[in-house]
Length: 94
Image (cartoon, rainbow, N blue to C red):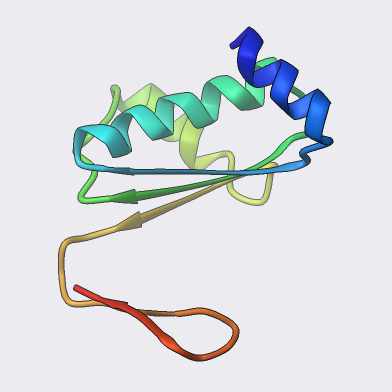
């Protein structure tokens, strides 16, 4: 965590995107919550692809309660999806 804090200060980062797939998505969720708790004022977006269930009901309620806060959580299932950037160029098709 110290290396992350140092990099954030060194580069003046205010927005962080954490991405993961499957087990990596579960870890990305836990890392996002940890970052929010340890580094206040950071805007965090977490994107998880095919994420398994993480935590118990109390944890799920806590994460659901983060809606509208500094942490945004997006769960993408492994169904067909098309993603576009602002330039409207096709980026990926799953």
